[in-house]
Image (cartoon, helix red, strand yellow):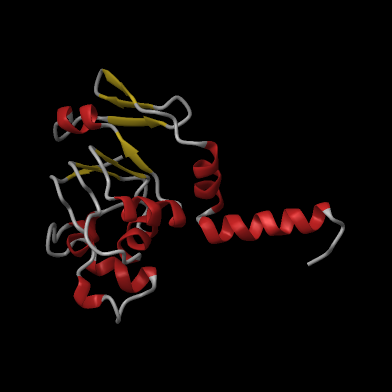
Length: 168
């Protein structure tokens, strides 16, 4: 797993420039512009299973969903930050992108260290140190496992119809 590390106040325009808001909506259109002004190498080099570490207030700025859609589409397994902007946090849950607050791990991570994420135990292992974070609520994990809020809701509605003996 590769780690991409950034600082504080990484806003949604840094993640996905606002000038593309009305011209890019699909993951394929969003991908080439991810972090283009912050880290021009990101879009071409990010791989599925990579992780982002960041400082305070990650995802501040506007409420556009393209940054989250793009990060999820390129396979970012989680964003670990000191803190997140509330609206970005909610958008990430809706899309099934995991966000983990673990300030100590972010502060102590150094480039090149091996990172392992154990969601079930609420652990982040960096090198030979283990950092605890509160395990994510099972509802958030269920939304993530379903691929986002819309697929989760569709699944729940289908289950409910089945329970009441109704076919779709």
